Length: 102
Image 1 (cartoon, helix red, strand yellow):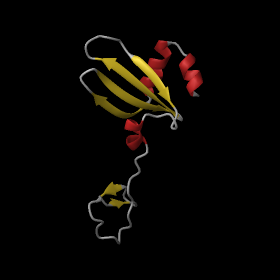
Image 2 (tube, rainbow, N blue to C red; image 1 turned 90 degrees about the horizontal axis):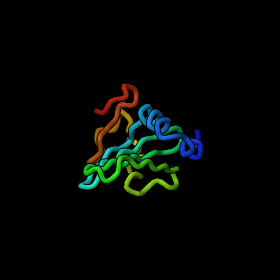
Image 3 (cartoon, rainbow, N blue to C red; image 1 turned 135 degrees about the vertical axis):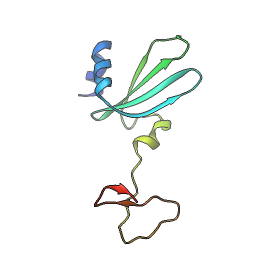
Image 4 (cartoon, helix red, strand yellow; image 1 turned 90 degrees about the vertical axis):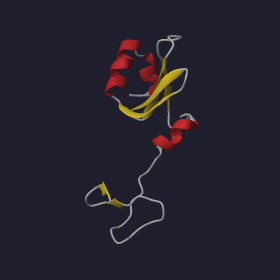
């Protein structure tokens, strides 16, 4: 599915896809609750008003058009170190074979 195909769907179909999507982030401020989801190779932000000023706003982004406030969460990459490294100042170590933080 592409952003263009998603944008052509009716509201109910969009909500169904968002419900099944991978949630990347959730943030709130005094105005609204914001959630960012990934659907295939694009991102969908939902914005819901706390005061009922609007029901729900759905915005779509490619990786290139993603707002800067989400970039760190979308592009975050775990730091992987070998078992032989005892420590790395300030960074969590990760056991690749067991796939757990150590």
